[in-house]
Length: 407
Ligand code: NDP
Ligand code: HSE
Image 1 (tube, rainbow, N blue to C red):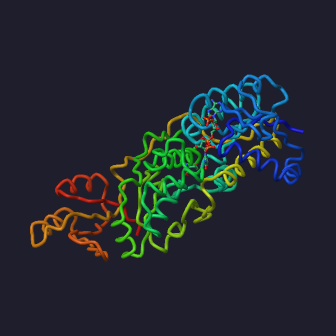
Image 2 (image 1 turned 45 degrees about the vertical axis):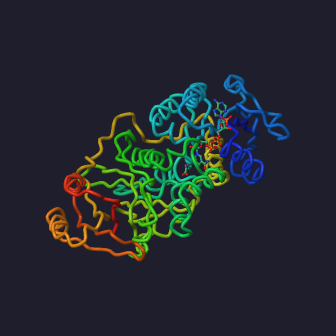
Image 3 (image 1 turned 45 degrees about the horizontal axis):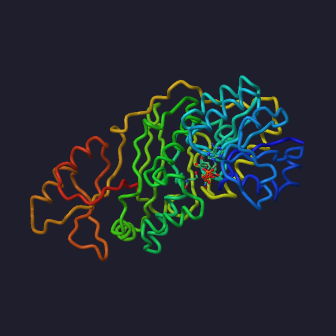
């Protein structure tokens, strides 16, 4: 029997306990031994819940118990999760986590500590919720040079965009719904401003390059400026608006960003809706591979954490190597990235200057009309560099919105 402790009995932590209980027999068979939850750590009491019998409030109880071999960390946040994880690994205990904030910031260091102490730091649930993506990148796709990762990496925002687009729901209402369903971060700004997707693309790019990609270096935009009119134009173009995290290798450097994009039906990410995530990986040998599934939520995420717990149980006292050094991986300059841009601005009517300036700024553009939207000019530019677009768009007043175009 292998004893496990769960840190945090919220959405994911309670899911971990549920998965381990519900699939006890299957898990025993796969792990080769029974996995028993010996402790659950939380700040709160859970009266009437059987977890009360194993609930502790002092982490030292877990740390000092030599029988606890594996810890599932589902508290979230940087501290005390960082200190708890580090101390567990130093004590030779393996840690499995869904905490992408911690993984993005301290992943390389914690992997190094795990290695030195013949333990493991696993983080399958940190990207894509229930979707297997970390292990595929570390194991199944290692024969390839990965040249691109492009994905819908945040369930909350994809849920919001889908509900707004399909039902015309209000942003705040859908966000509240996503929070009630347990999809959103404690501070949902991390979701809607794109920070969560940014940490996830930083983790994936770190794994691909084998070195530290700092999320602070990644240009990030969220979905808070997307409006009903944008969805009307998207429909007119037979496109949908998706928050994408992407990293593209060009001339040996990765160029990464997180931003809303207009995508069309020939892109597999177009039909990834609701809380689902989709991650497209391109390798120079395997070509395109797509990973799809629920990107957030209790049981899908807990399923990924428990798969790590099983892996940790199968590798007790033995480190499974993950290549992710603390050396910084330099990203290509965002200003050099090229995109087409969909621009909406106030229509100045018979003002010829406006048209002339558009041509001067962007050359020939493709004008777009949407039913029910009036007094606006909307167009798509040809592909230009971010820096050039930023410079040229300054020439216009009353710009309502700018969305990058992926077609
Ligand atoms: P919750 O807020 O639902 O759960 C966190 C739990 O940990 C709460 O019960 C909290 O208690 C407890 N906790 C916080 N600090 C401490 C502490 N110092 N000691 C003991 N317990 C503590 O969060 P989630 O379960 O949603 O998320 C957990 C982690 O998983 C986060 O990193 C999140 O980003 C990640 N994640 C979440 C997914 C989801 O769908 N929800 C999906 C994938 C990853 P209290 O409430 O009293 O503060
Ligand atoms: N808040 C995150 C999301 C949880 O919505 O994707 C999963 O990482």
